[in-house]
Length: 245
Image 1 (cartoon, helix red, strand yellow):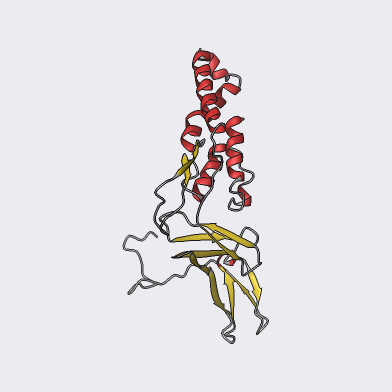
Image 2 (tube, rainbow, N blue to C red):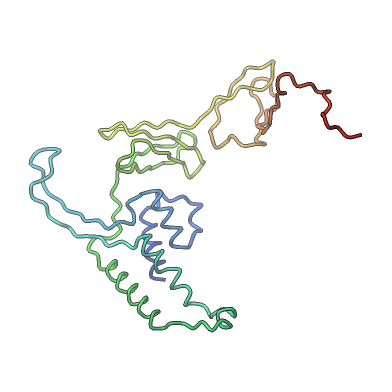
């Protein structure tokens, strides 16, 4: 429960970036996997120090440490969480039949190791630090505020509006500027007698989705199709060499 609580608390620090559909995920390893997708550094220990620059853009000659944060990361969860869970249930009939017994000495040693690690995390002078470079935009489709983290070393990321599902490509242009490109497509009415075009979002391109053309009032539907083209010099009436009567 301590490992679960620490992981969920970590996720709460990323609440503006955490996909709502992932809220139902309760396994710590899966939650941490989502967090690592948001911020690759989220399960790494980090130290914070501050200092006054004498020259803009040049590190301060004197820095004051604010402390180091110990984080319950994915590696520790993989090592202990499932193994610990095995002790929370009665042995299966198969284990009993095979003569397997619980090694309580090994169990206690694992618990002590976990308790020590959890204590170090909780005693960290810095807790749930989520410093990063962000870009913000009001969704052009629904107006919902979108906040996207741009990881270090990356110049292009994909952002999604959790309210309406609209997606964007965010390009870091440097000097605190970024460009948001909506994932939209211009679609022309399928009628041969109409050339009216509409703009749809990428997530709206679904088989079976329909819309009424504002111009000719006809109904358009996205479909999945396969187009077949006969091979050259292939006759439809050819007879196999080894045909059967």
